[in-house]
Image (cartoon, rainbow, N blue to C red; front, side, top):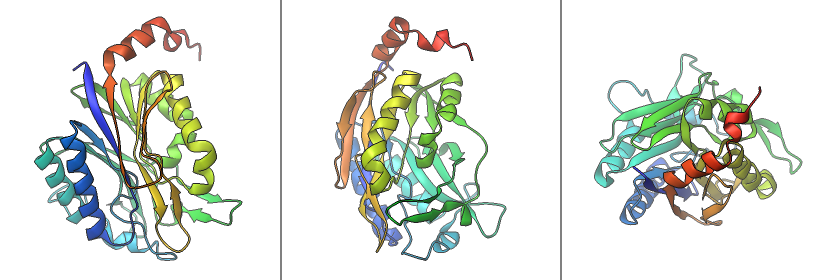
Amino acid sequence: METLRAAAVQLTSTHDVDANLARAATLIAQAASRGAKLVGLPENFAFIAREGDEQAKLALAESLDGPPGRILAAMADAAGKNGVWLILGGMPERSSDAGRVHNTCVLLRPDGTIAARYRKIHLFDVKLADGSVFQESATVAAGSEAVVAETPWGGLGLSVCYDLRFPELYRGLMSRGARVLAIPAAFTLFTGKDHWHVLLRARAVENLAWVIAPAQTGRHNERRQSYGHACIIDPWGSVLADAGDREGLAVADIDLEAQDRIRRELPALDHRKL
C-alpha cells in the first residue's frame, strides 16, 4: 500500500454517551464516504464527565476481553459498516484497581475486531495558570508499555494526548517500526493555542513520520474547554489538513513513497548516536 487516505475526527464530547457515540458514528461514515481507510477518534470520544464528576467514568469502564461493552460494540459496528481501520482515541478500560480505569487507545480492524490496545502512560496531573486543575491519576491507572500495531501500510504507533510532551516515547515507537503516529487528544484551550501544532510538527519532523491527531474541541462542561484543530501532518512537518475549532474532519492522503524518499534523502534516523 503506497497511499492511504486518513481522517482525523474532531468532536465536542459531553457526559451524554449515546449522543457522543452517535455523533462519532456519523463522522466515521462521512470520513469513509470521502475515501478514508484509517479513521481516528479523539481521546474521551465516548464520555467527558460533568464538572466534579470524574468518578462517573468508573461505571462506564469496559473490559476489552470477552463480549464487547456498550462503547466498544458501537464502534466495532461503525468500523465494520464502513470498512475502516478505526482508532478509538481513548476510552475507559477496567483495570485491576477498582478505583481507577485505564485510558486506553484501541485500534479496530475493518471487521471490528481489536488489532491493538495501548494504555496511556503519561497522566495529566497539572495546575494551569488559567485556574484549571487536572488530576488524571485520581481516576486513571497509568500504562507501562509502548505499542506499535501492525497494519497493511506498516507500523502504527499509538499514544494519547499528554504523551505528546514526551519525545522519548515517539522515538521508541519509531524504533519499533512506526511509520504513522496516532496522537488522539483532548488538549486544553489554554495549552493548545501555544503548544498543539508545535509539538505535533516536532514529533513528525524528528521521527520523519506521518502524524494523525484527532482532537476534542469546544466546551464540554462548565469549566472544561478543548482547543480543537484535529490535523494530519506529513514527515516534513507540513500540516496537510486541519479541522479548525468545530466538529468535523481533517482528511489527507498519507504518501508512504514520499516518506521513504524523505528518509533516504535526510537519513537523520540512521545518524543517531544515543
